[in-house]
Image (cartoon, rainbow over the protein chains, first blue to last red):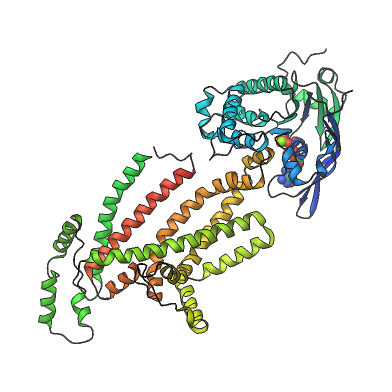
Length: 270
Length: 314
Ligand SMILES: Nc1ncnc2c1ncn2[C@@H]1O[C@H](COP(=O)(O)OP(=O)(O)OP(=O)(O)O)[C@@H](O)[C@H]1O
Ligand SMILES: [Mg+2]
């Protein structure tokens, strides 16, 4: 077996709510191999986002959160890294795409500038070189006329286009791991499929590992090799997609599967 | 954008007309007139008063006086001061420069203090937040003329060497001039800084919890870049607006402050002119001041559009 890229051991996350701590992630362990695509499924509030953000040590503003356990990235424990070193990892080695493209872009910066700043920060490019690369990236994610669109501001883009821009930002430094936290939940059904195809294509072309979070089994099918099913801050079942779909062992997984209208055919018995 | 500015500028004309009519009528509604005011407490015959009034055209019907004034004003003639017998324009513009300077210094002080305290308060929270907010509530409870009076008392009693009433003309000694305006500007700025500070604080807090700030963190940008490009630039939009509008309010505040510190600006001029019922002077001051306030509003809108690309006025 290959050395895992990411190895999460016994991760806990606890919110300090007015003195009363609330543990929302309860000792989670999983591995992601280089280039592997792993899915995380679970109902709303089960701790998927908190887990994903813990990997980048991100917490919602104004909340106080404490993490426990280990998050080993290439053997290095991210939870024990100093802030500056962690900042170097973010975006450069591990990047993230968030749920709501409408609110994820800085409204007062052009979309090009929001790719530039990342390239200048991590790839050490000059402003002009960064813009050239930003235009290539916009082209890569399927934005038409990228050279002129780079100067546009987020409000001039539709939701699907904004998610493409956010994906371009996330992959701009060719991270080893891309975390996508419900990247299509806020989008129209037709656009959802396009965004998922884009993610799959980029993963292949850039050789990234993908951590895909969703509450929708339909999204996972055909996209990932392995799925972790989460409930109440813990992983309750893990397996390769098709066997898990065919014969879920855990009652909760069965309930989740039953709740999803089965549109796809790939999820049938293998 | 250019169209918006043109439209806004065109709209100022009817507003100015309205303001000038209101000022004209209100002035004459005040008890007494220039003839009586100039007589002071000495008794003066009714005939003498009438002669003065006739010589100034004050015996004409009010609409006729107004039209006369309007015609002259439109051709750029603001009239002749009753008291000084010199063209009002030659008196008003040097004083306007003084007030503008005072307002500008006060505006810079308020902006600097407000943005700094608001930013610290929102970013550091905790103790700093408490101190800043306590200080702000204290300042808010004290009107600027009280602050000015306190400053005068404080320096008058304990630091008489500072010389608070020694206004120095800019042409004579530029740095001395600025120094002589610092305390008056401070008493104007403190109250305004509260508005700027509270708005900055609220805006930064609001922006901090936006998704794009977490995205910025996930990109690995340095905290300083996030503060500058994501937090401050977004928080600036509402702050620019309130600061600009507050600058207009500063103009009003300067009437009292200039009087207290004996600074020969527009405020003091207005105060003196009202006391002596110098109608042409009052009329001109009101006109110039409202023009400035209106222009400032247009400038605020332009600044607003410059910092926030989403705002388009078309
Ligand atoms: N800022 C916060 N302060 C306190 N508790 C929080 C905070 N954010 C999330 N939680 C709690 O943590 C738990 C897990 O939240 P999380 O956002 O990870 O759920 P999720 O699985 O991503 O759900 P969804 O599918 O709705 O995104 C929830 O019970 C939630 O109430
Ligand atoms: Mg979530």
